Structures are given as structure tokens and as C-alpha cells.
Length: 382
Image 1 (tube, rainbow, N blue to C red):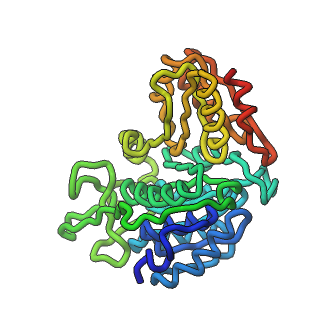
Image 2 (image 1 turned 180 degrees about the vertical axis):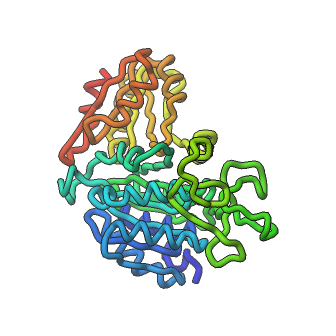
Image 3 (image 1 turned 90 degrees about the vertical axis):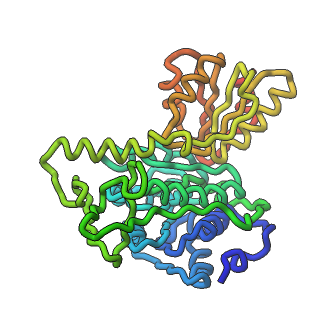
């Protein structure tokens, strides 16, 4: 059955969690494994209803560790896969996120953030998992993390998350929050969105090495041979060579592998990094935010513009990899950067590092589920 027929009318009034599902199905996701957790449960519920109608597979797992393990395994059959969780479950997934990075397994993980640490505030929005999304697993790695600030953008960013996962053979995190996940807004379902599928290898059996790059074109991303194909593929989280075989005592093999799986992302920042900017050409002050916090940030910038202030708006729809070069250049043109976040300071520290003291950087912080108001932000602008 056609996915657009399953989703229904092109114009709908839906929750952000439901938009996650719509975007995933439009991108070609056909396998979901998850465990219910507030405020992400609606994603699992909607997947259980819609995936079977498209010939897909829905699995309710016993916990979040099993959930991400299942989507990694399913991805190696060539299927587009995802899971969804919130803070406590996201913590449990960190080891296997590292495994997906090391094995270059395409998959998407949605984290609908809530207040923490620990059980925290199950029904309350937060942006406290930003640094965990980047540094939650151990070792040296890069990861792609996207962050929507509306229900429509949630749908669109889900499609983009799958496209990036497939293109770069990497797990991609969609970092939303309880406010975006549970709010309802009007959305438009695209009729023919751009959908990317991983490159599959097709060469002589004897020439195949599962982690060698460049079979089809010059790249740092290995072409993919799914389980069940004519090729034998050895997959391990251990340091491995191009054959996939473990080699854990050779520093050169490890360095070569880590440099390749990190640089395949950092070398392509122009393709991966995406932000929504307004008024940046002539601004004296820039307001930087993301997710639910980007909405009052935009209102504060509009307020400042109406009052004759040259203030820019920067919405980080891509959080990681962080574009240090962009903010380094920005700091040469503005006098002040105001960072708005629902945490005690995450992206704020990255901005401070990138600007190296060339301009003032201040934090507008909110906790406990309270979203900063335009007035809060204006107090740092005026």
C-alpha cells in the first residue's frame, strides 16, 4: 500500500510524536523496536498501528537495551530502522549507540527529552540530554543529531535523519522534547519527499571486503552488503580492519579506523549542518537556540526588530556535529551572542569555545519544564 494513502489527508492537525512516525514512514522506515516511556510512547503506539499496513515490522521489546539491539540487527538486513525513547531509556542505549557507530550501522534514534536526571519529570519538557547525545558513549567518535522546533519540522527532520543515516552509514539522533512531542499543529505531508538509500556493493565475491571504501566512488563510507546477500560480512564492535576482522593490538589500524569514521562526517559539514537564520547580515546581537526554546527566541528577535534593534535569529536544527567555524566567524561580526536553552548550559559552552572571547556570550537558562519567555530573552538583548 502507498504510504501517503496510509497516512491520510495531506493536511492534518497532529502531535509532534505522530509527526515523527509520519516522517519515518515517508523516509522508508519499515522496522521499529521500542519500549514505552513517557513522553515518547505515542511514537510506539502509532508505529504499531501503521507499520503493519505497509508490510513493516513492529516489535515491543523488554527494555531499551533490547530495542536498540534489535534495530541494529534489522538494519543489517538492509531495512531502514528506528527506535524512540526518553532520557532514562536513552541512557540505557548508549553502549549500543557506540556499537552502531563502530559497525557503521544506519539507524535512527528519537529521544523525546524530559526532565532529569534519573526518573526526573516524566511529563515535563527539557533539553538536558544535548551533551549526552554527543558524548554519551565512550571513545572517540562523531554523531549526527538533529533538533526540530515545530511539528512540521519534526516530520521533515525525520526524513532527513533517515537520509543522513543511509548516506553516511551512521546512527542519527533526533532530539526533540515533551513540548514539541505533545503539542498539536497543522502539518503538510509532502507528496514526493527526497528519500536516500544506502549504497549497495555489487562486485566480484573474491574482491569484497565489508569495510573497504571506494567500490563505487571515492568516499570514506563503505558500500553496504546486507546479511543474506552473496557476501560474507563479519561485524564486530572491536577495532577491525577492512575485512571486519578484530585487530585490537595495532595502534595504526585503530587510528585509521577512528579517523575515517569521524572524518566521514566532519568532512561533510556543508551537507550535514543545517540552521535556520534570519537578519544575520547586519546584526549586532545574535540569539541562538533550538527545539522548543527557539520559538520564544524568534518572538524576542521580532520584538527587538520592531524596536529598531539589529538582532539576528539562529535556530540550530542540527546540533551535532557542532559548527565551530560558523560561530567563530559570527563572533567577528557581532558584539554579543545570547544562547537560550532549557538546561544549565550545553550549546552555550560550545559557543563560548568557538568565539574565544571575541564577543560576549550569555546564557538564558530555564529548568523544571519552564520554557523561557520572549521577555526573558529581551532582558539580555536590550
